[in-house]
Length: 354
Image (cartoon, rainbow, N blue to C red):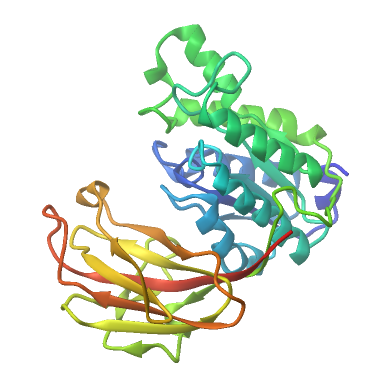
């Protein structure tokens, strides 16, 4: 089936995107110029009688791992009619991320077996050669994602290849990109042109392999927002402020040494949706009273902007009930302006390794 065939009888069309800062539109002069909004408008122009809505669930600087746990609440629950996935750049060179890309596709197919899914491969400076790949980590990521997509009948659009070609032709990458990754308006136009060149003829076959390509199957990956964690214990407070993405997630926060937050959960994977700001500090993390790590919620980017992020703590827990605990240490990076810890949601799933 082709995409427009699947959309032709719909009166409401939801066009969904999940990925990193490229999908968020970093570098564009306004959101209407990012590739996602232009693709949404392209579909709206093709179906003038329908109401077409963009669902942009991108968060800059995050990987497919975070995307997988956000997928249900921030994408699938909004009934998408087509889903675009973009994580080749942020997953670059990390083969451990491939199961999460497959998890995104597999979870989406479980939710809706006939949901059209498109995998996008973007440009990353220094990683492309004439074949659209590099000789190092990006090649592993691109080929790995392409193999997964093939197994599920998911079209792959190499939107970064024509951008690479144009940069090579003109010899001035600043004409198309703002740094090493993020396009400007002209660069996003190249992405849009390639997507809309390939998309009308792309074939969707909706396969669902019984055996996952990566031998990992994520069962019911979920994000449970702080406001829904009614049995959370400790002396963290629920902030009236919200996270950047979507503007709808309040978060637990604390800044005094010794303050704790305990969250019960059931699953073999444990992670958290966190918030990075310029006054973020360091917390001790425990699972079932066993020390896991000392987690620093600050980094150098916090000096420039606040953002949402993901902290991953365990993926090999025994099936059953567990307790995640945060404890404010009162320590911080020298450049940080404070000791605040912010936790917006619990992320968990059961993983079957085959």
